[in-house]
Length: 182
Image 1 (cartoon, rainbow, N blue to C red):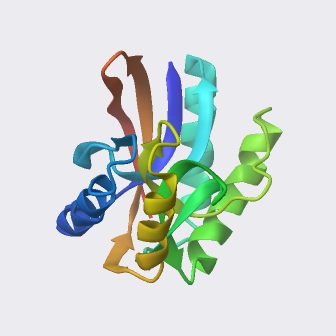
Image 2: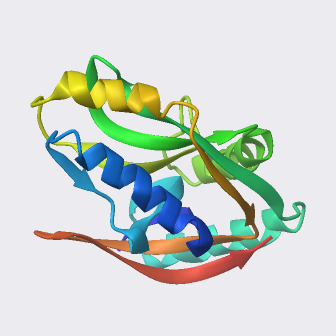
């Protein structure tokens, strides 16, 4: 199965995120918005994994999360990947991402031992839209700049989810496979 590890966005914050998405749509730039039910922070993208790998991921998660406690996460600010001159992904950021990043790097170390690719420069982010062309790029860039310091709000990270991802012509379908509690 095609899988990834994620932190779901608190549903209480979803409406604020959708408001930002609506502001972006007003630019008339060619955007594909992430559906509210698919909003998540990707912790690790695994790609295709088999049953044995799923079991090893589960073991690692259960062992490692014993050393952690739930923590607050403040969603704040916008940004783009790969860079403002060539926007492909629009995201919301994390204020003070230390605890989030520490957990991600600790888990990634274990996943690398399993043969998965190491994350080079992981930036905690929440993808909210994908840019599908250059029409109105300047207007979009101005809007992103205006939203640079937007405060979405705080949530508590207390659960990570192994998700199955099925790609379809209308967009991805994510299915929760296993929950891991901090």
